[in-house]
Every structure is written in C-alpha cells, then in structure tokens.
Amino acid sequence: MTGEFDARRRIIEIGRRLWARGYVAANDGNISARIAKDRYLITPTGRSKGFLGTDDLVIVDDRGRKLAGALEPTSELPMHLFVYQARPDVHAVVHAHPPKATGFACAGIPLAQCVLPEVILSLGQIPLTSYATPSTSEVPQSIRQFIGAYNAMLLRNHGALALGSDLFEAYYRMETVEHFAEIALVAKTLGGASPLLGEEVQKLLRVRQNLGIEGPPVDCVDCGACDAAASQAPSAEMAQSDGSSSGDGSPDESIIDAVIEQVRKALAER
Image 1 (cartoon, one colour):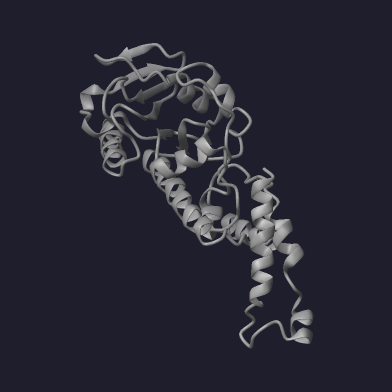
Image 2 (image 1 turned 60 degrees about the vertical axis):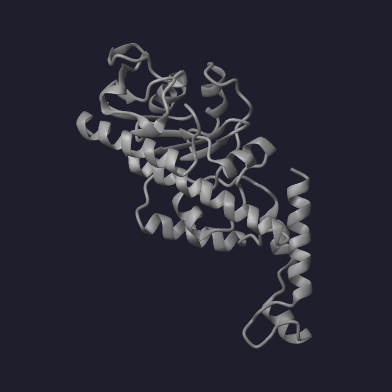
C-alpha cells in the first residue's frame, strides 16, 4: 500500500501520462489509490488529468464521504469503491478512454483473443462489460461478473478500466490494453489475427504461475478462435506425408488462409 505523500505524486504523474498519450481528453478519466484501511485518494471531478496539482486530490472513506480536499471527488467514485471492496488485493484503479481500446468497447468487441504472449502473461484476456450509464450505480453492477477474475476490462461505450497492486501497475496495464487494441486493429487490416492454440495458452499460463505473477486466476473468454485454429492445424505426420510443410515447419499458405477464415467467422458470430 502506497503512503499518502507518494500516492499524491504518483497520481499526478500518471494523470500527466494519460493526458500526454491521448488516453483522456478534457476532464475525462479518474485515478485512485488505497492509502490506508478504508481510506482512498482520488482525482476530483471537472479537472483535466494532465494539469492536476497534489492539493487537488481528495481523500474519501469506504462509504464515499469526503474526509479531506477542497474539491469534490470524481463522479465515478462508486466504481472505484466497488473495486476496492471486491478486491482486497487491489490498491490502485485507473479509468481512461484510450482511443483504440475505447473503439473496441464502442464496437462491442472484447479484446478476448489469445494472440499476444505478453498480454496473456500480464492480463490474461480483456473482457467487455455490458453498457452502464456513467456516474451511476449501474457501472459497479456492470463490472461485477468480471471483477474477480480480471485486472483490466473494456467498459462498453465508455472506455477501459485497469486495476493494480500499486498505481504504476494499474497504469501500465492500461498501456497494455491500448497497445493490444492497436495491434489487434493492425491484424484485422491484414486479414485477422492468428490465435494461439489452447495448449500454447496453457503453457503461457504455467509460465505466468512459475514467474509468480500475482492476481486472480485467468479465465478464458471463449471466442471460438482456439477451436477454429485447432480444427485447421495439420499434424506433423500429415504435413510430411502430403508435402504441405516446408523444411522449417511452416504450414502451407492455404492452411493459413483457412485458419484466418475460421477466425473471421468466429468473430462475426459473436
């Protein structure tokens, strides 16, 4: 748990990074940290995250009552408090509107495919919540089904949410969400991403466990891509017998095209 003084400085720094990267515009976004038992430091409402001062931040208790600060806390305070109450291991929350990830959220598409080992190791997958009216009690309810198993999620038509054991972990997870969204968009323009097979994902999850990466168990958001890829992947024996594999083990282009088509169908049916 970060002390109040350090938490103030880190929230200000993260707010500036969010603004500089274009993850927030105008007065969008909010950041908070658990600084003591039932005490939270949070950004104020109506202020740009790129130009905050340490004195602008607000301290609230677990019931949302303001304990210190001249300004009022963000209107998304109920969402932050819900996260802290549901996840004792979480000590920081970052909510922003990174453009590409928010584009997926507005299109109703979760970042659920297992295509990037780094994302699987750090986040598992990034689900999409149901729509909830911002600044209302609907928002905590919309994340309820995911809060136990995920450290980042897309808020439908509303942006992204990242959680962490400290402020920079939460912020870096937000960076990972947007980076994954950008790569996913590039892959789509090239015909679609080629997902990892289920056994490959399980290997990564074992590596995650061996590395001691903390967090709740990673559940798979079933997008059908693993089954599609597995159904089209030839065995080594078949590849050798029909000559469809080159000397370095690369599959025939027709097989790649078939896998991409299956992934496209899986994405279209969601």
